[in-house]
Length: 198
Image 1 (cartoon, rainbow, N blue to C red):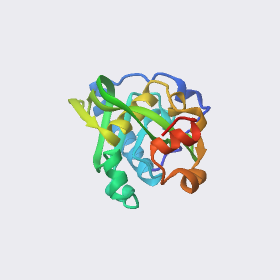
Image 2 (cartoon, helix red, strand yellow):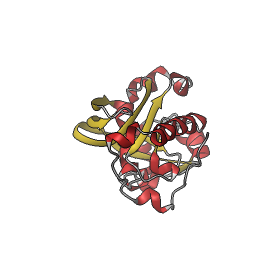
Image 3 (cartoon, one colour):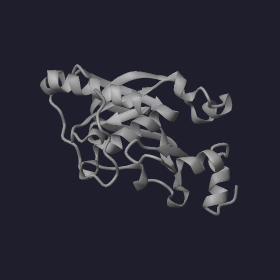
Image 4 (cartoon, helix red, strand yellow):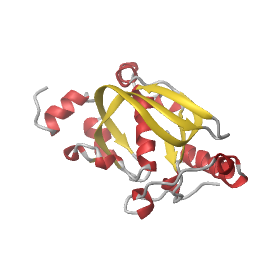
């Protein structure tokens, strides 16, 4: 069953979601929610979906970056973004315990802000503690695009959206991103939109 994705302005997106117990995670209703979230994320399509985005204020997100999602991205862009496929998995009660490396800037979109994108700085490498869908403790170390996805989804669980971190002058519709900015490097974009030297 596909769930409705709530859009920016809905109060649930601005609340800190509540943590789940291990028993709750293993329960039928939460396991069913995970399946529905996976179906909704894939249908969108997106690379991550947090429970608040479907109206549930719970510390729960699903993540998957399928190879087919980047098939029209050049090898050079994949390399620059450090983007590889990420298999489907669940994170519950996640906490970033380490953030390393320089901040890197790329355009991000959000299923709860359909049709828009903006340049967002994110840490290049992070370590996350969380529970998986069975309640087992996990430590995830991620770099590049995967680290960006994790930070984006964890933000949702803490009542934050990428617009809180973006460079405001870079906010664009998806159509204009594809027309004007998709083929430009972050440095070129900074020069053109932020009046910085390249």
